[in-house]
Amino acid sequence: MTIDDKTIDKLAKLSSLEISEDKKEKLKSELEDIVSFVENLNEVDVSNVDATFTTIASGQPLREDEVNSDDEITKRIMDNAPKVEENHFVVPQIIE
Image (cartoon, rainbow, N blue to C red):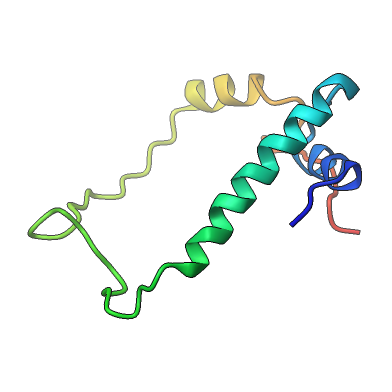
């Protein structure tokens, strides 16, 4: 897969990042290396490998899912968001 300027521009829009022109070439090269590495994984024979694997003998330890409605934590999180309305994050539309 070839990474071109159009792909970089689309990724920048989707991630809400500003990528300067002087960094685009380096980013294209790095992304092509990553995609090439991932494409190499298609050549690995995994037909004899179980679908799941864990190094923990008894499986993944779980914890109780406890609700914590601390208004101070919520306020601190929302204060770091670029845009908030009625205690919800507002994000740009990415699907046209």
